[in-house]
Length: 191
Image 1 (cartoon, one colour):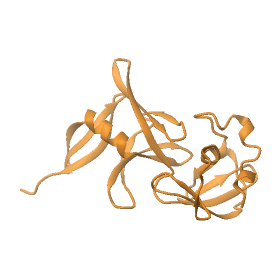
Image 2 (spheres, helix red, strand yellow; image 1 turned 180 degrees about the horizontal axis):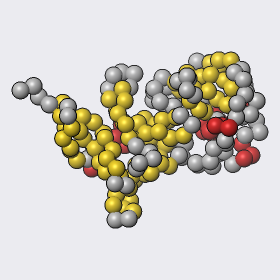
Image 3 (cartoon, rainbow, N blue to C red; image 1 turned 45 degrees about the vertical axis):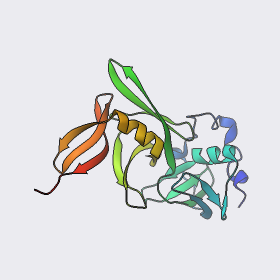
Image 4 (cartoon, rainbow, N blue to C red; image 1 turned 45 degrees about the horizontal axis):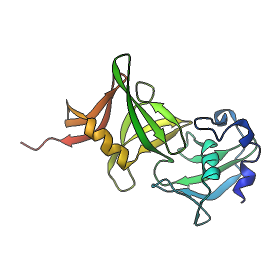
């Protein structure tokens, strides 16, 4: 399938601007089938066995991506819906910046496609297992999609982290907009 045809008519709406996405949550086309497209755990997009090397096309495809209640990922337009494969999370947090709003720290996470999320009660870090079994934070973004915190961002956040006692041991994390955001856990040593 030619991917360019899938996004015809989407681009003029401003969907290529960072943070601008079409209303895929309101579109309900029937399933068109399975597309030989995989989003790797490292964030690379593969189509028919080859890496998609056109950043603008990948960014545009990311704007029409959603995850549904069945746990599957779909590229959705007003008239088509294609199931794709995602190895881990479809998005990556590639930058984090702390500002002080209302005299308290507020961390802003940015995905590789320009989504900017303020960590707080609406967007919280949660720990989940990667395909390799490591527990790494992720954050909900939009339309059922989550972004895995990239390793370089994770290390920057760890430098600012503090610890808190939890039932199972110590939890490492930080506070953003007054809300605790977990980054990892340290198990208690058996006594």
